[in-house]
Length: 168
Image 1 (cartoon, rainbow, N blue to C red):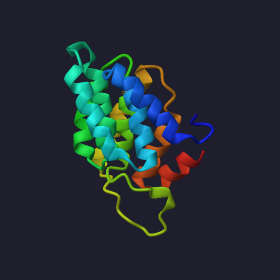
Image 2 (cartoon, rainbow, N blue to C red; image 1 turned 30 degrees about the horizontal axis):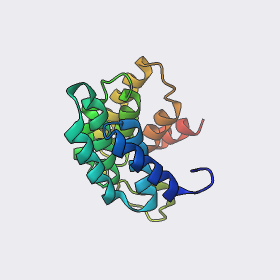
Image 3 (cartoon, rainbow, N blue to C red; image 1 turned 180 degrees about the horizontal axis):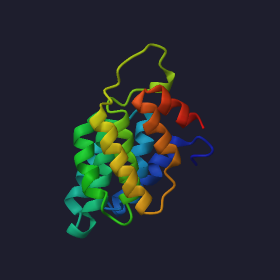
Image 4 (cartoon, helix red, strand yellow; image 1 turned 135 degrees about the horizontal axis):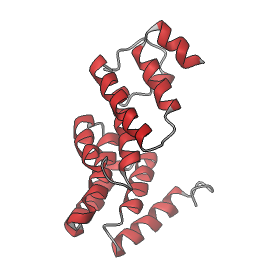
């Protein structure tokens, strides 16, 4: 459905699946992403609330991952980082949670950096860059390819030598 650009139909499919199993966090994460793309992100909160009411303690990482995604897309970076930090130690959600955390640290205002013409400070501080580097090391330990994220970190420093190194 998504490949045929049938976003509404895909959302309805996910919603019907969540009505049967509200704590299916893979479906919930996909729905949150679809709602964001469709400009209906605010609708996601009720599905998170339903999932939270039905979630067992053993599935809290999935719930926190979905909460983190929702907060990230809702321009609440601190709240997103707290939720994603809980999910980052999970075997299933950990890699994606860490990747989202790095992206938040590098672009906390969630601005479209690459489409901007004006020189603007996006709030990426040296502390953010250091935190992103630490998280990338965690990804490396998990065996993930971090080359693109490392280039993004180099670009975020805005130093000429790092920009040249990222270009290679």
